[in-house]
Length: 228
Ligand code: CDP
Image 1 (cartoon, protein in one colour):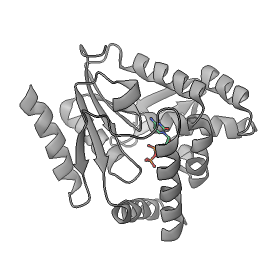
Image 2 (tube, rainbow, N blue to C red; image 1 turned 180 degrees about the vertical axis):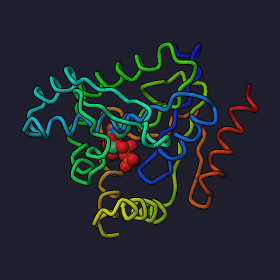
Image 3 (cartoon, rainbow, N blue to C red; image 1 turned 90 degrees about the horizontal axis):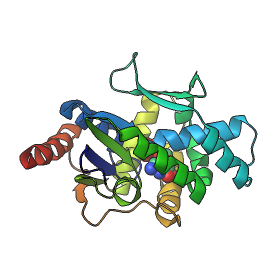
């Protein structure tokens, strides 16, 4: 289906190194980086801003359909993307813990995921190459992707990474808060009926527990280059 476009699908749980690695792999290959988590986060923010209750599924589905979302390379930070929701830059707001904790309510709705998947497939049309990261990319969004990776790491290592990341952003979360959030999200992500977090059968598993970011990138880029 998408074999004419070079796509790299990268899935995995929070703290597996997925976002950092995906951005840098895209940069090395000269491909466009697409962060699908940012899309679910932006919808969660929209729902909260519109005071829609998370139990009002029809209204959430409507919000997903009418949402005007753009993911642009960030001018301020080359290593990041800028998320524009209905004309407003929400790049910082969507990373707040409050959003992180509520994404599960929108991400479990089948029709929301349908809209997101359509949007994500449309996004890669016309691109020379793309690195798309998320939870269901290798399994649902781009099942025909030529390159599929599933990144994982031990629970303790993932908590440590996320904790350091939040500290760098001066967020007030404790290590216990981070561990609770990851445990909850692992559970909801893996047990969701539609688009659960799962390694695609033909994805390459990369355990990043004892690897540096550079080692993971070299592994992934090396495999792709060897294949060309
Ligand atoms: O960076 P982190 O792993 O913390 O989260 P993210 O990739 O920004 O994704 C936030 C949440 O969105 C995840 O916990 C998933 O529940 C959801 N998500 C999803 O359902 N499907 C995707 N393709 C990407 C994210």
